[in-house]
Amino acid sequence: MKKLVEEDRQLTGSSNKMNTSTRLSHVEINVSQHAKSIKFYDLILFPLGWKRFLCTTDCTVYCDGFLKIILSPAADKYKNAGFHRKRIGLNHIALYANSKKEVDIFYDEILKKNSIASLYQDSPDGNENYYSVLFEDPDRMKIEVVFAPKYFDKECWPNNLVNNFDPYKAGH
Image (cartoon, rainbow, N blue to C red):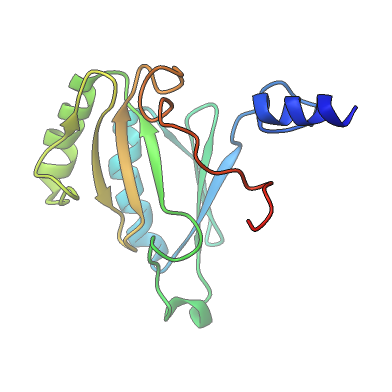
């Protein structure tokens, strides 16, 4: 039995037989300036097909039909530390685009026209398998708009990197 559980863990990453597949339900982001963040997320999410689902003083909810992004005002006592993606916690959010052209249009019509700087390069970058543009929200949360038609293909980057770490080995 132990051998079967180990083989299952290696193949699927889990020995849980409850689900064969799951989706992310929502991402909640604590923001320092609720109104400013709503205006920013309206600007970037609406062109990608998202709708504002709910807007209250306690939270604002966006939905694309599968995933919700929730903006919640941070309590004053937590605002001073600010956000930094290099700290433990969320690094960035990536939103799918339907084509490289859609990434380019998003860059030209949304980012450039609203003076939102892209990170790491002056424009969208990549190839036919992974093409994206990265930028920051008002609290410096990194956001990526990406076209990646083969993102789940085991033969394509980053899935074809060599596994070199086993967290179950002694010393990890």
